[in-house]
Image 1 (cartoon, rainbow, N blue to C red):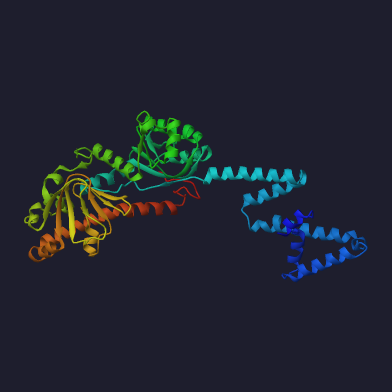
Image 2: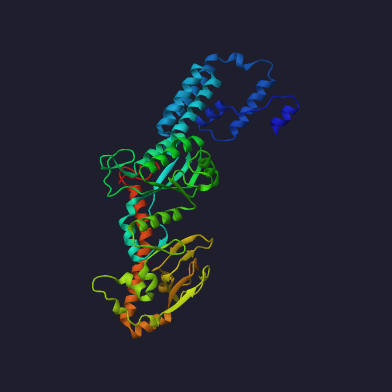
Length: 473
């Protein structure tokens, strides 16, 4: 307000006196009395008929300015060594030298240019990252299918990209990605895509790149990095799967020819999928088809014929098929269960409903959904769901919906109690099957968490964050 009034009336504008502030702080006077004394002294100097400064030696002012200058140098160029990183400390010295060798304005511009260049270099190294993920989708499959996928898990490499990807960061990022992909060299040895030796058991079949955490992608990175990557992967029969691509990044990838318009594959190399979970599901289905002995349901889901057609006995038998087990041990099981045929899009239960029923999928497809409709897990032939809330005797924590026409077997808590009283052997078998089902369901989460913990604590930094390195098989 004072500056506004002074300007309107033709006076001078006031400003902070940096040197006066430093001098006052160094003397330890942290009181408003200092301001009052300064005002009074300046008022006296103004009304006196002669200049007091004419009687004060110039050496006094020179010493005072020298004191302030030395104090600033010690603060910002010496003691700041313990308050800054090495790069920031060097930038401070370079800016100081530029100001003295040139002038204040040019020196400041040189300092800003150097700081900008430093930021670009640092962001190219650390601004983007890729995290190695578990290669399991949220699909709960039959026991035999899980065993097949366990044996072939190394065929899928899934990476979640983070940050803004421009040419500098993308080049470094893709070099590390190549270190995770295993191919067969001309001399029939297994090597990584970057040429380094590999100890993997087999080549990589799928590379899944998730873009859901990527904030931006420039055209140079898309055209000079991701397009050549897709072409190299195609040459080595590795399928590139892009998931969770935001619309603005999809537009860049399309314009640069990484993917064709409408998400069509480029030379059979890249496949665009809505989410990471669906992308991993696609890879699992392909691995199961490679294994053979599959048939596809109407939704394209692989199923086991004996599970889909053998009733509740065959559903439970897949979990109990161990040494000493005979399927005849489950005779009389069906009288405790209720078989239901449900139409597609039927709601089986909603969040908050009473969890008094355990469900077994003989044939079809069922999904568990969160409050916002996100798929938590998908169950196909042989799946068991609703077990957690059923055994904990608490209300449903999720909703369940049949995605296709399905055949389900229901076991109520009342019928389970009746079974325990009349056929304790069957009750034990059912609870054992449910326990193995829970273990399979939890294994996806625990394996994924264990891999991420291992990535964070490995000696060479297997997760690209502060130390941008990825795990090599």
